[in-house]
Structures are given as structure tokens and as C-alpha cells.
Length: 255
Image 1 (cartoon, rainbow, N blue to C red):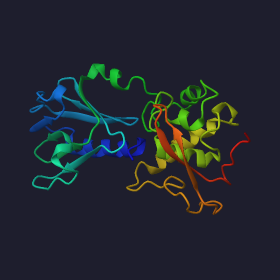
Image 2: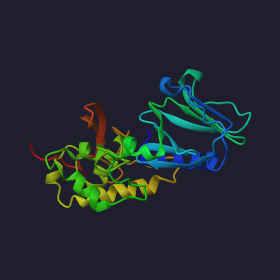
Image 3: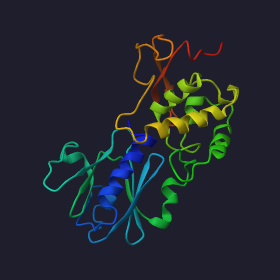
Image 4: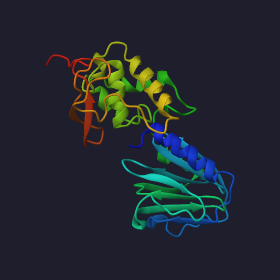
């Protein structure tokens, strides 16, 4: 599931394949930008911003993409077979003489003026893996609504950018708190911010993300061997998302 660490890795791969090279092919398969042609322009850099990707292109243009649940960018060598999914799922193709980047199932793809990037990502809080990371600002954002459940507050990208549903469960496990506790009731809430930063930093260079509770329902807790439990919790958009926790290490508050 794409979250801050995997988007960081995707940006690094795209930057290595595209930056400093002239595009020999450009194909944006979304109606609004289907006629846009970036061929002949150089890619300047590819930068992650939370769970967003900003591909900056010569001529003060930025291709903004978001992976959400199952989008991906794949890099291919000349002549290599594309394996990211059927052709009808391809939303973008950017190619140079050495590499082809193919974007599959991208729910967000738009071409912006670079000076207008704030329209796409200006609402985001401090980026856990970005140069703008500010722990104090992230904590202030999280505490703006003390009655809000911790899990929902962590998922709100306006508070801090990069936490998705996997890290919501992992951060709460690290801090030994259930995700539905009101954030104002958590002693030393700065622990959430510290744990978030540590977890994403630890996984940003790993090919396989290390998880302690997410996706492990019924399996023993790595701390106490109690079976991990799962339930659902609403995210900021109102969708029910799976949540995992250890009932012994993360005792629920009394009703």
C-alpha cells in the first residue's frame, strides 16, 4: 500500500531514470491532458511530497501524480516487457533513450505550472521524509482537535504528510495506544510524532516494509505473543479502513 516511504522510493527510482534526460516520448492518458506533449523537454527532478509525486519538467511544468491505494510507477529498459498491468490501466508514459516510466492505475494525474504546485500539495502538513519536516508544527496540527481519534488525526494529511493506514496501526502499536483514543487524552502526545518519523525513516530504504501488527490478525504480538486483533475505523474521508492492534500492549480505555 503506497505511503510516505514507498512514495519516497518511487520518487528516487523515477528521478534516477528520468532526471537530466530529454523525453523522447510522452503520453498522458487522461482526457484533460491527452493532447499535452512533453517530448523534447528535459526532466529536472522528481520530488515526493507526502504521498504525492511531483515530476518537474523543463518549461516550468510539473506532472503531479498520486498513487492512492493501488497506483504505481514502473521503470523499464528498452525492449523490456511491461508487466505492471493491462494496457487499459496505463495512465502515463514518460520515456527517454535509456528508460521508460509507466504509470499504472494513477487516480490523480495532472499537468501544472510549477509555480502552481501549491494548488496540489499546499494543504499538506510537514512531510515526514521531506526537507520541510517540522515535528513541533506536526504536533500542533495533531492537537488542534483534542476530541479526534488518534488514528483519524494521523491519517489527515493536513496534520502531517506521509502516514497511511499501515503506519496508523504501526505508530499506535509503537506508542502502546489504541487508534480510537481521543488524541487529547494521550499523555506525552509528542510520542506519536517521534514514532511516525522513526518508522518511516526506518523503512524508506527497505524493499519490504517491516510491520509489527498491520495485516497480522490472529498472529502473535511480537512483544507479548497475544493474538493481534482487527476492526475497522473511519478515515478522514469517511471510509472504513482496517485497524490492527494488540489488546494487551494497547489496552482500550474504559467506556
